[in-house]
Amino acid sequence: MKITIRKKGDAFEAYVPKKDLEEKVVAMEHPTLWGGWIRLANGWTFQMPDNDPETPLPITVDARKTSGGED
Image (cartoon, rainbow, N blue to C red; front, side, top):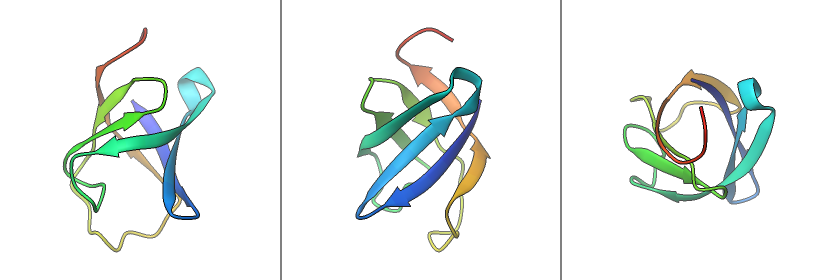
């Protein structure tokens, strides 16, 4: 699923265009965001692709939804 990640202050936010959903990232497996899972405020969890920690934001990536909500 395509999601757009951006940084707002010290926090990350994710936008899911397919669902017109914008949520804060409330937990993540790795502090660099990439290569692990992230959890959004609504409970959805995504497996993030491997990217360089210095990847400029915002960026749209293909992430696999692993849990939470409807597809």
